[in-house]
Length: 510
Ligand code: ADP
Image 1 (cartoon, rainbow, N blue to C red):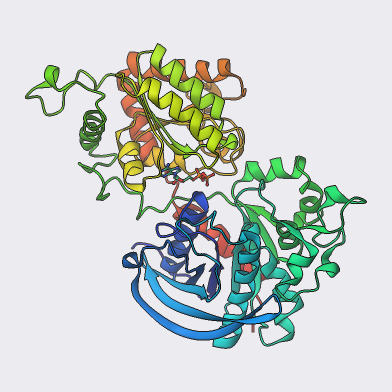
Image 2 (cartoon, helix red, strand yellow; image 1 turned 90 degrees about the vertical axis):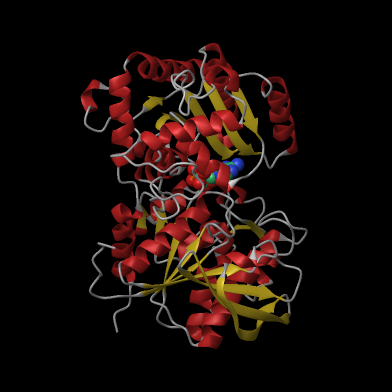
């Protein structure tokens, strides 16, 4: 509300595979919604273009209406496609619904169609829609490998048709997935795949001399976009030093920027959050105790008998509660999560893990852990995805654990802090840019959590031990850290301006 409007408004269209809360799998969905809202509040025009996944709950979309029936090219045919307009969480969205099998299924990802080809289709379908509808934004903002072919299609095809004005920004949220694509697959969206099979274009460098058939949509996106952004300054440095895309990024260094993600403070606000049994904020923190008790009681982490008649019992109030809310994949430090469960139990604390494993073997391992721990009085392992529960857990937590092996930005530590949970994190990527150790005497001003560097169990133990000791032995100091982390501004207000500067620096001024 108190945000000043920019003097020269521009039009940005995001093309993305995820958007919170209707089609969110991880941080990508949160970032698109948060950045779009921040740019809207600065006075810019923003639309989000998203596949009309079958799994999207239509009641979460306001004012849904069919706006364009058109055909878009795919694999030698023109596929009848519908574009709908709607509003999601205050943000205008254009939904692309093809008449073929793409985007059908119970989940955002993992349907029985060919995912790579579905996103190649989407990339073309969005440009085709802009052309048919006569919409020319200043900026087309694409995200991840899924929309990495769009800059190629734009510069090599649609610029020669009628789209002239837009410039293209690519944000890389995670370098791990690079959109491996065959030459012939790329050709299906109407480009000549063989043109891109060179080192200076989209060829996967690791296959030089072996397999010129193999391309990377992410690499093509880097080469063909006007600006490339990744989601934290430290991750930017890390990606220039290691990984096979490092040389491509280095040779595009002058258009490559590190901009820290923000969190969406409409979705994530403990003062107004409708999922919480009690609201709270830095100046009025009492509600947090109610949230902690509510969660402990709901999950059987407190026995009713001892607490009869006491609305906010103090018995479990002094047991530190740590939460870990994450996709259960190798990147997130699975062995360190397991170790934290063990260590928390040894230290007499409580820990709740909320996570979903896409891999059946990992899911099985955590199911075993759940079976052996969930009956006790200290650990709960909840193997599901639940937006509602995640809000309650952040609010209930004294600490939030993010022990990632690598972490481009990481939202969990930022959300946790806003909800008064002190972060315990591994020093990597965006975690290194947002969490500073309490015991580092050289940086008292920024100190806001507990940080460890090694990927071994001892390093984690050390940070966890220090956090628990602080919590138990220095109550006043702990309360002031809680207040401090709640007051840190990790919102888009802080960093959306850097995106707007980037947009303006590449924009064509008529
Ligand atoms: P990534 O994008 O790699 O998954 P981030 O930390 O950037 O990691 O973003 C993760 C987001 O997904 C956070 O908003 C987190 O709360 C949410 N999240 C992860 N797992 C779950 C889950 N099982 N249930 C609810 N929310 C989850």
